[in-house]
Image 1 (cartoon, rainbow, N blue to C red):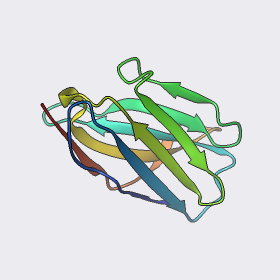
Image 2 (image 1 turned 30 degrees about the vertical axis):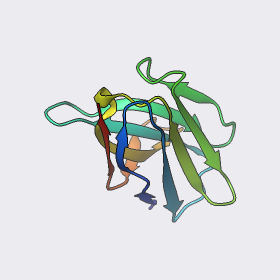
Image 3 (image 1 turned 45 degrees about the horizontal axis):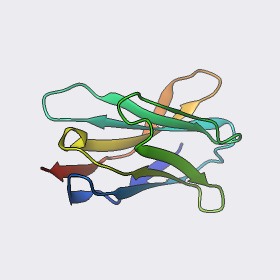
Image 4 (image 1 turned 90 degrees about the vertical axis):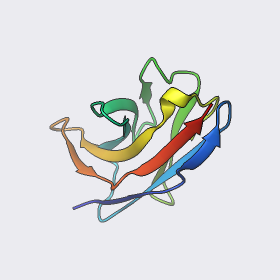
Length: 119
């Protein structure tokens, strides 16, 4: 089992920045990838970014490329999503999740943190 706790959400003006940490516990993550997803009101959950823990390889959705950066701190077992140049359309609940590199399934999810970007 892996427990995930997101934090760092809040209200920010357009053009501003936020950093979302996601702390993981319960299992070593070296055989996993971690991802960020988001869900806006009335919309389906969408992929934002992912990082392979062991190699730090990253991949981003086109909508956030250049503006968002995913990173991880091995010592803290924490993944971060640095969000810059935020837009109102980035408003959503942001979730982190753990993906098995064997099955490619996202098996564990955090509870989510709200990000609201005002215009």
